[in-house]
Length: 255
Image (tube, rainbow, N blue to C red; front, side, top):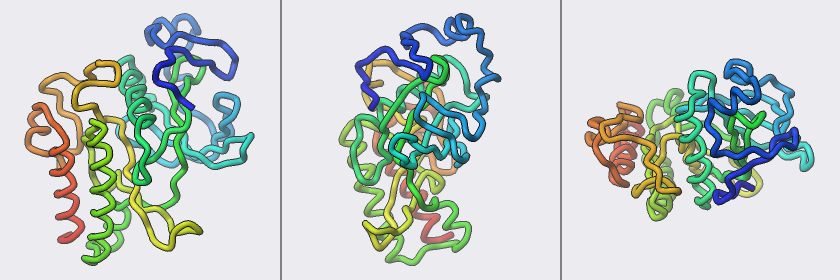
């Protein structure tokens, strides 16, 4: 389990590394080039316990793999940075995502269960593995959703976002591809909503350590679903997420 108040991690080599050491210092110390650890091969063992099984896809700033926790023989999801996003600022943003998700515990949000560094340089976080399909893939197939199905979806999405907002977290990238509909199983006879990819989320009053990860005027998000204030790079709060959800709702009901 990742603890946000611990400033050190231990790699699969057993070497403890201070996370406050700069990105470039770590690369120089370990003679590692970003390209050498940009793409992980299937079968790779991460942190001595997570075996890469398959590549699931890419999000706003990272790539997600399906992994097996070898001791528990349990399927999980592991997210790490893409090669193109491997920089000091992206590492800081990635660590912030881990801290954000570690503080959130809601059935409509994916739970982070572990955090660490690959070769003491490349950060990764481990989450619950969610089986299902994204709303984007469903809309591509069906065009629009029946009113009763859409109503259930947006009620669940509203509760999930409402919980995040109550903790001071704004997602900033609500769109169909970041809304997962879980596969019905033993515990449920119907699909349920899971909100994905908090890679560009932020605390309304700054980061968990008081750090601001975006500057005034910086525009981050998906233009088709962004609020006007977000498009202009102005300060935002939970209302921007609600605006984005409204855009998704319009698309779901009208095509």
